[in-house]
Length: 153
Image (tube, rainbow, N blue to C red; front, side, top):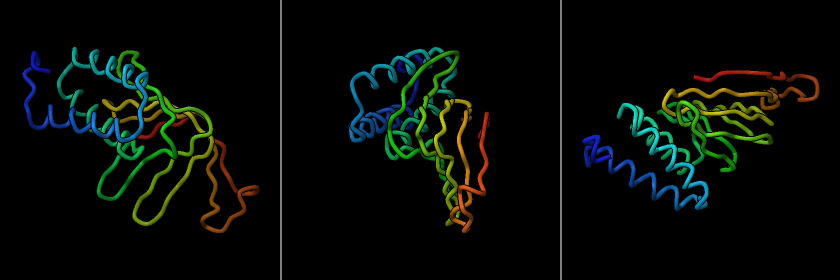
C-alpha cells in the first residue's frame, strides 16, 4: 500500500476498519489468508479497485452485505462464503444461501442460490434459486420462479 502511495485516509483507515470487522465477524485464519492473498494480487492493479474491494469487504464482514446504499441493501443470511481470485477477486457463496434485497420497507428473497460476487466490478453472478411471492399472500407452492443464471449489478 505504501509503494502505491496510498493515503492514510481513506485507504489505510478502510483497511484497518475492514480488519476490525473481520475479527468481529468471527472470521477464521484460513478465510483471512485467502482474503489477504486476493488483496495482495489486487494491489498490483489500479488503486480504484482497492478502494472498491475495501468497501465491499468491510460491508461483507460487518453485516454480510454485498451492497449498501441509503435505500437498498443486498445481503446473505450467513457468513459461509469463501474468497477466490481468478482475474479479479471474488467472494463465492454456496447452496442453501438466502440472498436478500431490502429496499424501502420491502424485502425480496432468492432461496437456495449460489454465486460469485466481484466487488471491484460491483457484480453478482448467480446460479439457481427460487423466488416466491409469499409476502404478497401467494402460496409458494403455486406461485414461484426458478432461476437458472442471473446477474445483479
